[in-house]
Length: 372
Image (cartoon, rainbow, N blue to C red; front, side, top):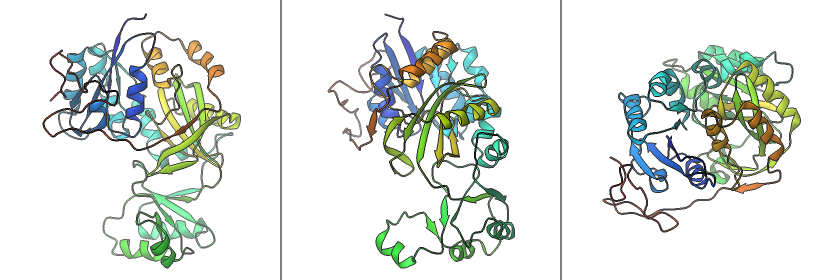
């Protein structure tokens, strides 16, 4: 067997964390020890990982100090920041982790700043021959918004808007005057993303604090989530899955499929925006919607664990050629369903893991507990 390794995984309560932790710990060729970290002391990763520590939010003082300290104390081989709010912060301080001997699976800061900002992203790719981006306008005032609304034909077709830099569906709405408000009230859940132009105007008519917004066409067609392992401006491994159902912006049902035309788009995207290790790119109707430059939802088997492939690349155990060779082994037709689960614990003690084992063993060998 290969030598054991220790991985620190942040955002241990994010939607993909539970499966990722279990699959990393289930690697057969070596022992993989996973230490979860999250600002939420009851993040689900606390009950699934080999150890857990609460850390500050990425925008709070002490975040980097706490994360470096954790990596040093547990002897981390790799750090995987799994939240979009963390990637830029970690990338800006990558030298501190490297000085501690920790490989950080994060993209260069310059690439992250483009990938996380939809205006800069679309602008960087608008002339790429095999990449289609939506029609869009960046607006900074109500007057600019209304001018862009008319330019984009908002009276004849649905448009949508979102802050250029945001997470998930925060700040996102469809502008739609054709959908009945009565229908929305009676037949849609109260978290509906539809908004009429008059409702928008009512919110921002006073002109105070108008945010930067990206007004754009509504993309329609097949939704594809593509997972990529990148390095040095090259997409080494690309997998595509259908986004058949979602909840709160998180995919809940899909299948591995082959989409060579989207692979060509991704190759050009990564050439211009040289992201590294694992990241996701979402397409609708063949057009680019967004990039998530971090871990996302993967489809796994016992032998197919994309985050682990990236770890091996970071550790020098895989060459770029080794990762490219994995393309022929993608488990096509593999399907996934996301479901809710629960863990149970008292406020002053740790939970039992789903397999009945004690959860949250500490990193120092004391009786099982969450690190605090």
